[in-house]
Amino acid sequence: QVQLRESGGGLVQAGDSLRLSCAASGRTSTIYYVGWFRQAAGKEREFVARSTLGGFSTAYTDAVKGRFTISRDSARNTVTLTMNGLKPEDTAVYYCAADTTGTGTYDTWGQGTQVTVSS
Image 1 (cartoon, rainbow, N blue to C red):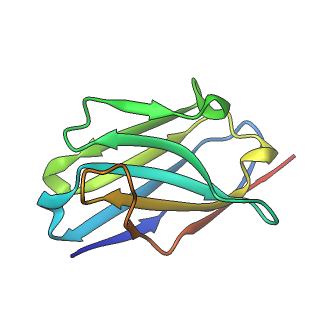
Image 2 (image 1 turned 90 degrees about the vertical axis):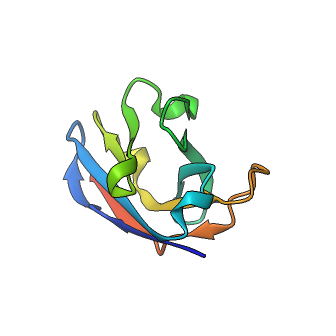
């Protein structure tokens, strides 16, 4: 099994930057994709970004393209989401997730970390 733990959330002002980290432990060799998702209050959880195992292929939702960057340190089993130019609408609980089956389904989730962007 794989365990994920997020860190790095907090309260920032609009335009600021924040870096979220996702530390993976356990059977990390089974991870195909690592993704970041977010859920704002009263809204459904949405996809933010993902990276393949080697970090060579990434994808982003349109709302964060050009502002967020996902990167992976395989040696440390850590995936980082660097968020620049934060906007109030980025406020949400951010979750790290892993696809360990290669089917495109994220079957392992972290506990989430709160990001609040004030205007």
